[in-house]
Every structure is written in structure tokens, then in C-alpha cells.
Amino acid sequence: MTIIGQVEGHLVLPPQNKTTKYEHLIPQLVAAEQNKKIEGVLVILNTVGGDVEAGLAIAEMIASLSKPTVTLVLGGGHSIGVPIAVASNVSIIAETATMTIHPIRLNGLVIGVPQTFEYLDKMQERVIRFVINHSRISEEKFKELMFKTGELTRDIGTTVVGTDAVRYGLIDSLGGIGDALRELNRLIEERRKAQPGAMVQ
Image (cartoon, rainbow, N blue to C red; front, side):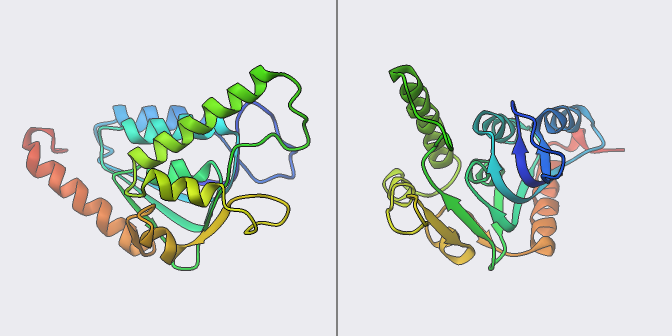
């Protein structure tokens, strides 16, 4: 399963934008969970992020699958791509790939009412909780990266390269497609041994 370009959720982006529509991915994940012939799911990410609720929905779906899951970040796993990247049983990142960690924001809009701010604050807390619950990064370190000033032009946050993502405990290991497939096959084999009756005939 690939998540490439912008995660499209409640807003329809222009046709020239490369997008991954979450309403297409959710049924695919449900089908993968129900299909006895599918023994594991590999998610390949090269995303700039996108819709926060849609991204969290995808991440929650991946995390709740009963079958083995591996995510591989190639190129980038930015913004809401971070929770998706850590949602699997094993997460891998290419050495040259990057992940941008930043606070939730509404581009080009002025927050005019307290309720909007509270909504963004609660949404941000959901993202933080999900990431620290599905990776080895500490809450303090993740918040430090999220609110760091000076890293991004006219913004706050941090761009983390593959090696640092592993060092911080955000991602499990460095690697590529071969490593991701080996990990997935290992997890599938472990699951077969634990549930011999569930093996595909």
C-alpha cells in the first residue's frame, strides 16, 4: 500500500496535485484485515502530509490491524505522515529520507474564535499521544522537535533525517525495500508459528 503526495481528506485538492485519498485507503485496509490470504501489510510512504483527521484515521487503521504491518519511509514522511509512519509493528526509514515534525496549523487563516484554537490544541494532543504511544521517542523529545524555532523558514518545527529519526526512537531502523520485506516476512512467519491453525492452505 502506498501513501504518496498529499493525504487528501475532507478537502478535494486540485487535479494537478499528487494525492492519496483516505477514503480509498480505509476500505483497502478493511479488505486486507478480512482477507485470509493476506498475511501482512507493507505501507510505503513518500508524503508531504495533509489532512490531519484523515491521516490520523489511516494511522489508527494501520495500528489496529491484527496482521503484521511494516512501514517504509522513502523520500519523506512529513507532518501527518509521522503518525502514519510509526503506526506499524515495525517502522523503517531510508537513510536519505526526512520527516518534518511541526505543530498543527491552519495555513492562511486567522483563528477568530476560542473554539477553533481549542479544537487545534486537542487535535495536536491526539497526534502527540499517538506518536509517543507507537514509537520509542519520549514526549519531551517529540515536543522539543515540534516546537523548535529556527529550523524551518518562517515556521517552527524540525526536519529530521533518517539517521536522527532512528536515534531519537521515532523510527525503528534504517533500511530500504529489501529490509522492509524481510521484516514483514519475519513477522508473518512468527504469526504463523503462534497460530498454526491460521495458516493459509
